Length: 317
Ligand code: UT7
Image (tube, rainbow, N blue to C red; front, side, top):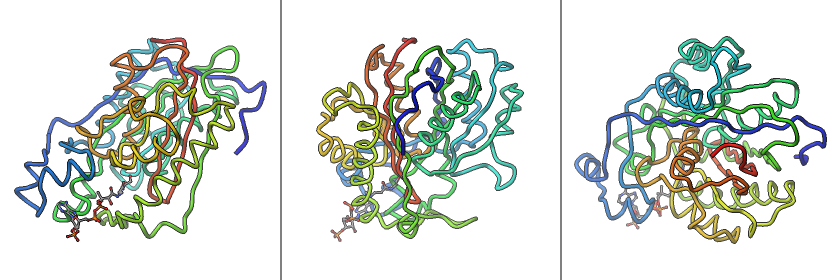
């Protein structure tokens, strides 16, 4: 993938929001229904509890509304909505037009499915639309994986959950926040993580783990090269919240201390397309990202896909 073309219109994130359902499922709850225990789940994944029970439209409207309010952008001024999701509420139509209607937007709306890499795919796509003249976009990442999780399978049930995060992206004079990006896919790895229409998630956890670290590191390295920055310069990493051991191993190989990573996995589990924007919103809400910081977003997911982006944070705090 190319570096940012000189002269492209830039964009900045001016608002963010997040949403999770009310119902909490703890590891102790899972102990009652499957052959597992809190010690195993915590040490193997980093997850202590997760939220379940939302709909993709409902969570998207909630996180999207927060992002709009924080940005101060009038919903009528939004030029486009991109919703990253691998769990639309219906096969047809996409969930994004329904979200568009409920948020009072009057613009184009489409879904992007790149599994857990989806939000970064959508964010990069949104930058492309701004480079072509759009002014204000709403980008949401939401998944409701609880509906496609086999709650009797101890290999997957502890991992997956529901959640959503959103950002408002606005055109700006000058180059904007995005300094480098990378979108990858390798469809030959489809068999390691998939869900048939009407089915449940099937996963070869060990193989996904093995590939995840490598493809996250490869994608992040490409983005840093495109941006012309080094790992030492990265102030904050927002990784896909799949497994604390994957995040830790990827940070280690990249030479970025784990202390620089957004970590929400202990209370959210893996919310797929929702995971990166949820973690980004959490870090912003807790003032862990400051103007001028170099932020790395990096994810991987079914496909298998990988995606990353380097942002120079600025403008809003
Ligand atoms: O967005 C991408 C989504 N997918 C992922 O990120 C998945 C990536 N993979 C993983 O996160 C890990 O592979 C898992 C967490 C799914 C599994 O961890 P692991 O360290 O690869 O465990 P394992 O499958 O090798 O199993 C180790 C042991 C086995 O017992 P033995 O054979 O050593 O006696 C399993 O039977 O742990 C046992 N085990 C469990 N024990 C308690 C497997 N699942 C459980 C469980 N509770 N839930």
